[in-house]
Amino acid sequence: MDNTTFGLTLTILGMSGTLISLWVLSLLISGLKKIYPIEPPAPAAGKEK
Image (cartoon, rainbow, N blue to C red; front, side, top):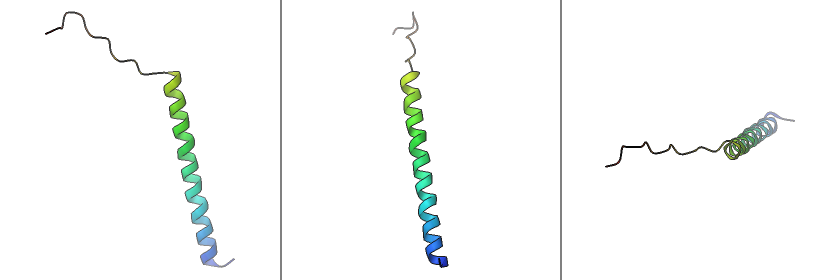
């Protein structure tokens, strides 16, 4: 395998690995948001205008 083919192969594998890891991380974050939803803060009593 010459240097150009090796470089292109390594580039494609590296980019694919990065995109797949970002996709898995986004799935993990989405799952955690469904398990632990963010609740809006309750309005404080007596602070009405």
